[in-house]
Length: 111
Length: 116
Picture 1 (tube, each protein chain N blue to C red):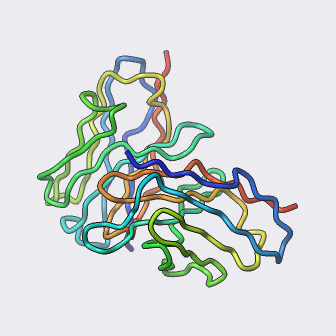
Picture 2: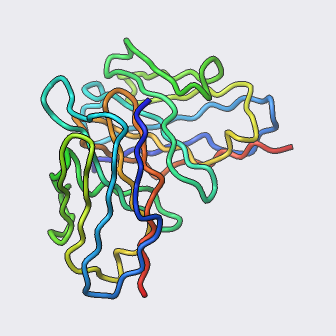
Picture 3: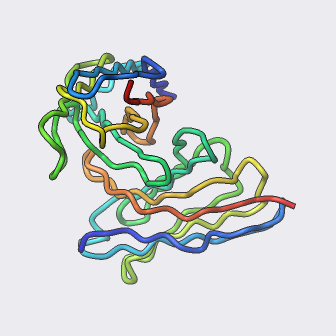
């Protein structure tokens, strides 16, 4: 099974400042079709996860451009260029080869 | 509107059974593979099962293998999860998730509580 490891566990951020979350997979996520199925999700308390990014760097419709994804192979990063109050919550990375595997989550909170 | 709506959750005793459903609308359901994902209270996300778009292939997490069965009815746009021999550790919110080359759509979830 592919294991996804996220760091940090928690990220206190000042409003308007950047934030960065790392995700590492136990094996390459490059699929046989050439795509890399690495996604990022955001979850607020009491809400279902909301997809932000798919295939490493593609933003879902309606996702602000302050969110960006990057990486390749086994190492991936989600960046928020300027954190806003609505960005608090838990962020998960997720790989989708055949089954889904999730990182343990990173809690983003305002300092 | 494109959406997934789960139903069927509730309180059940250990060893009991429950059947969850997910109703799809606003898109061609039969074109998409579907997953079930669960989240225990205060915990992270855990994949449960996947079914191919035509129902011809299913896979399960080791923790539910032999106890849960996923199925779909493409004529009715529904995805089901039959859960038998339920355990306390099966407690959580169950989400159905649409899959298209990594582009996922999540439902709102339904709560399953396994307790005596």
